[in-house]
Structure formats: C-alpha cells, structure tokens
Length: 81
Image (cartoon, rainbow, N blue to C red):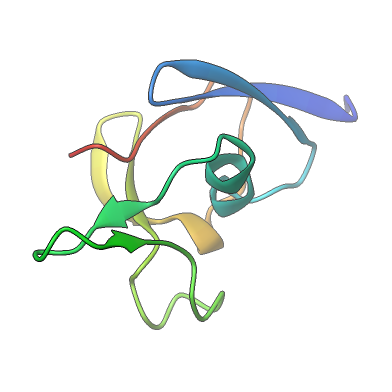
C-alpha cells in the first residue's frame, strides 16, 4: 500500500496521505466543499457525517459526505456543482 495517492479536486491534482478522507483532499486543495444557497462557502463541520455541510460530488455521485469517504487513487472530486 503506497503512503500517498493522487486525487483530483475541481480539475487539480492533489496528493494526500493514504487513508485520508475526501474532506482532507478538499482542504489541501484550498477549496470549500460547497456553497450555501446564500453563496457562503461550506466545509467540514462535525466530521461525523451528521451535518452534511461537507457534501461533494465524487466520480459523478452527488451529495457524498466528504468527511466519511476515504480517498482512492484517481478519485475525481468536484465541489462546484
């Protein structure tokens, strides 16, 4: 098992430690997980999957909780939808 892997966040490659969550990848990319209906940036809040503030699209699957999803090599993460 490699110590690092590469994922894509909004089109940019990000190297994360093996075992890191998607929320970590989004933070390392300097991105917000999503925007609220009023345009405010949202990110991980509870870290337990309860608040749903960290929802992203992963490999075409929308509304995935980034704090509960472990990164996989080549994963495509989109926070802009």
